[in-house]
Length: 186
Picture 1 (cartoon, rainbow, N blue to C red):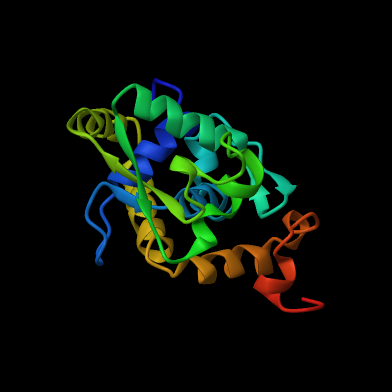
Picture 2 (picture 1 turned 90 degrees about the horizontal axis):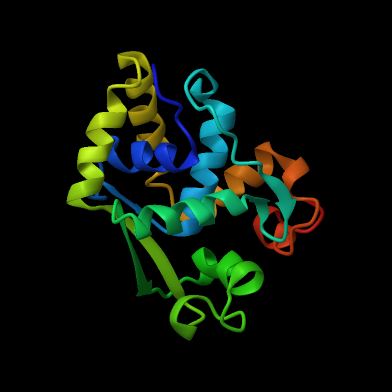
């Protein structure tokens, strides 16, 4: 491993990692899912061996929060490595943070719709970057990353959030949705 792997690189690696299921290769649905997956990647894998930058998660309104994740996806989209598509959803779960915390348009999330989710896809350029990044990891790390993605990328979002909240309660101390996720007194 010669080049440092940073948070934006970890996002590309996670997007490009193969995983079976309904989700097409190179895709993760939702900023909340992506953020919680990076949170778990830092804590439940051996990524500390290759990930040279931390996302600096802190307890916030919706559990573990990292401004670096939001900055990284904006940077990756600007570099045309990922496509950050906003699409309507019937489930407001993925837009909690966008609406309440960092939305720059009056707290209504992308495009002014409170039920907009952000889905991420590698572009052709992003796939080339993914292939280059893969060379920086060991085969064992690549396998672990793929297994990690298979485990968490397809869980229903509320189940993923519940998993994070129940395992990492220290990050729920400021949560506005703690009782909704864990139940009263959870």
